[in-house]
Length: 312
Image 1 (cartoon, one colour):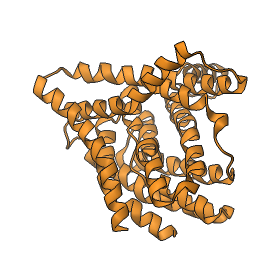
Image 2 (tube, rainbow, N blue to C red; image 1 turned 90 degrees about the horizontal axis):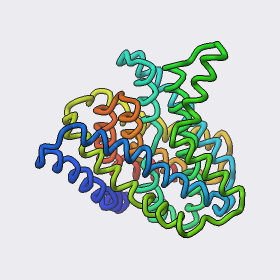
Image 3 (tube, rainbow, N blue to C red; image 1 turned 30 degrees about the vertical axis):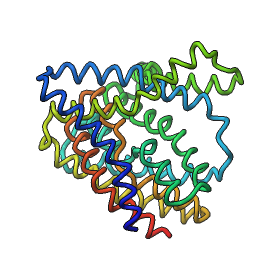
Image 4 (cartoon, rainbow, N blue to C red; image 1 turned 135 degrees about the vertical axis):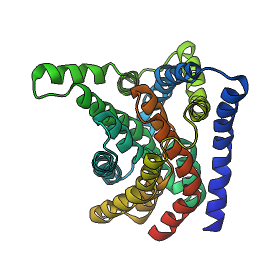
């Protein structure tokens, strides 16, 4: 378990360096807060859609795995999201949009940076098909979930007009558009022309580092102490509650050991930096999600190896 913790720390170190670069740049050059806001919008509206389109347009190339693991993992996401929203309302008296961001923070893992390398190192190559399937569906399910939840909080009503307004807002979200477009292109069987594919891949590769720099700029904007109470609660839900719920569902569904270990490991990973982009996009919980990402990434160096060991 000690070697797994060390490996987790080594994987996390570059993430913190990129966060520090964003933080230090804001402080050293005394950039206005608008700089962080504009960069966040660029990442959300351009870079993340490029990454998701690239991922989903190759969805059919993923190897087949036991589909029950999707039910176990994303079933846990729905359960913990609902519990998280309730906790946000009862404990912190947050509004509907803030509850939605709080809830998705409890379930959105940093699977791309940490999940795939950790799975390969701790569970072996045989776990990668299961992990890849979760990573591919993760953005589709969780971005859609939080977008619908936020739009319902803002516009939801039992009237046809209210539902139509909410549906329109969801369908025009650039994240959702990119995911649907990628799946549609994959289903068409066509090959993306090199003239278009090359810049899409360049933008996709820039997404993760730029998102982390944006997170660091956000920390400079809010400070480290802002939102620590809500951020601590999100970290607890993410690192403890979600892995436990995933494990219970995996047992109930009778998943094989390797698939169970893979999805419990993914559920135990730190909060993904996409949650900060969501918070900034919706104008709520920016400080809390930034704190949750930093705290959970530090703590996961201990809790993720423990979760893997317990499942084994």
